[in-house]
Amino acid sequence: MHRRQFVLGALGAGASAGSALAFPRAGSRACSTAAIPFGAAIRVDLLRDDPDYRRAVLAHCQLLVGEGGLKWFDLRPAADRFVFDHPDRLIAFAEANGLKMRGHTLAWYAGMPKWTETITTRQEAERALYEHIDTVVGRYKGRIPSWDVVNEAISDNPAIQKPMRPSLWQDLIGTRHVELALRRTAAVDPKVQLVLNDFGFENPTLQCRAKRAAFLRLVKDLKDRDAPLHAIGLQGHLPGEQEIDREGLSRFVAELHGMGLAILVTELDVIDDKLPADTVIRDEIVASRARSFLQAIGDVCRPEAVLTWGLSDRHTWVPIWFSRKDKMPNRPLPLDANYQPKPFMQVIKDFTRATS
Ligand code: XIL
Image (cartoon, rainbow, N blue to C red; front, side):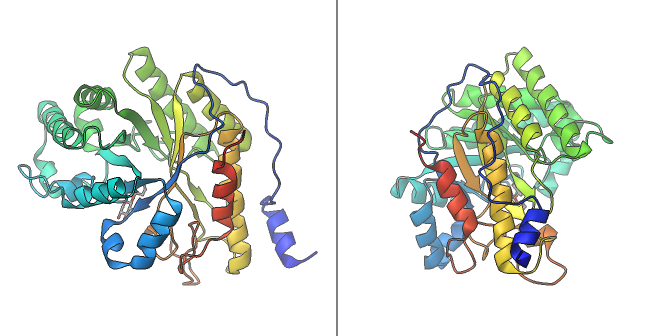
């Protein structure tokens, strides 16, 4: 047996089609068999500066999300200032090329400008949140049809931490900040798709099980309150060294689908810092993790969109937090650093094509 087959077999990363686990097609949502739009998180400066990047985006993407630009840190240099040039440029590029946009993100714990530390009461926090949503969602009404309204609201590990992640919003308003943000966004743009976006649901670990349970409790509470919520964003930042919990993830998706929620894959990449150095083996494992993740979702209901967090290994956030000890470049994305398709891109093409 060649080393490559051995490693892939040992990691359970075979290219198996995987038996579709029989899950009830729950919920009131129809599951589409149409082609699934694919897109990526984009850096607007690279569209201007790197023609190969621009060509790759136009060749592969039907929808875009700003990797930055619509986060508080980018938009809000001061309490009384909004800076829209980056999102304006990205949306203009998308519209000029017939691409759809996603908005990311209105309420998050991270990426908050320093001046927001002056917000110290519940009343001030609600006012700041509402002003932000009114201004940003209002500006792009009809041009951004889907928003990550609240991002990463659940703590990293509810098995040992409080279920809700600390943030300006959670600390001052409490868990109700999620409902308030959803309702305000719906009030500004009644047609926009309202999404809760989070990560860490995919592996057969106590931490992932606890995170799935905490997220489901939050969503059920929102649905019990008739909060406007249309879809769940599964970020999909997959630890490459960990297998996908096919059954656990499918059950999680079936529960969400059963509540009438659509599923979006919003930030897919495979974090390869602990994978073998051999790039052929590493690319195969990356592709296999992505395939297993997508199939676990598709076994219940095909997602409405699949986006990766970046398109090419040349520009990825992964080394910020997960650089390799051997100093080799990370390879988390569907295109290599020369914008050439890797096995991961074939997984995406196979998964997103129409099934009937
Ligand atoms: C990341 C960006 O990719 C980085 O460039 C930035 O420095 C930090 O944020 N989950 C999210 C994204 O929802 O907004 C994060 O994006 C990656 C993790």
